[in-house]
Image 1: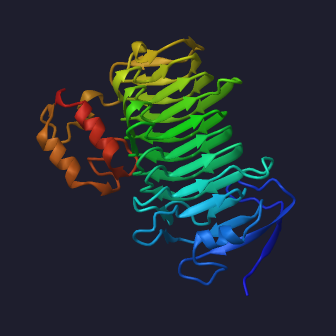
Image 2: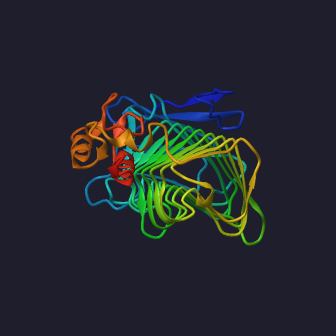
Image 3: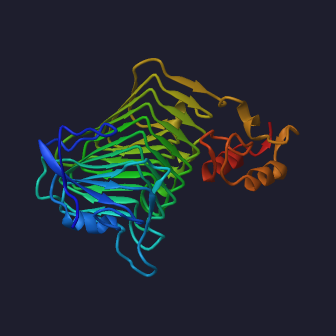
Length: 352
């Protein structure tokens, strides 16, 4: 007999269902709980319900080319109750990690909070609208095609997330939006790659109505693309406020490649970038700073102190690959030596 719990005014890590009461379903791959898989909980849940996931790694079996979690047309809150470090959704390069179809009820938001989402093939989170989706306190990494891919009038909010080391051939490595308003707050984008537009973000508005994107308090470092290494935008009003852009590399507009629309910049630091790294129409609202070097200068990657970023430093970085605490190879300071650190080191190669 499974346990169903009713909540009223329930609040966890800032995410609520927005309705008076809802059922709470529990998932634990080791039990005891209502279910051992997230998908079984989704199948049982109704619009507005919460699914509380205990620590563990949730995947599909070998050769199962279905998403690990398919919301279908439901609006649900998916919560890792002990946070992203403990609760992992791993698609294992078979399919997207989380998929969401257009919901039957637009008025209830869907929310994903407190997970590490990795190894999505065709995307980490893939959602179509109309839908309201809020993603918070997640790490999305090592996905093929975007970490988050939303299209068809999705109102997307991303807050307090780390999006790193995702890559794409045709889309952004980080987040792709098409026809929807976007709010991104206090999030870090590092080491994301695209062959085309937007290494970290590709934000496209609608042909039929104006869209808006606000990026507040975010960091973009070591992202790569042929145009718009950090951000590419089209057909929308874009505001960038209180952000940092550090050593993103590629072709035109390594900070921003703006096609149609206007961007506003305020209180934003661009290091290892200059004003020419913003391509397109933009408005300076004050407090912006462009520095030729980031803190520590070109020598931040000179790990052996010989005055040059070279093979010795590369060896040191690769030798400390993975999670670490304060190790020399962690150039970005995020507690992990990964593709973002490697990208930054290679970008500073040579005498310093």
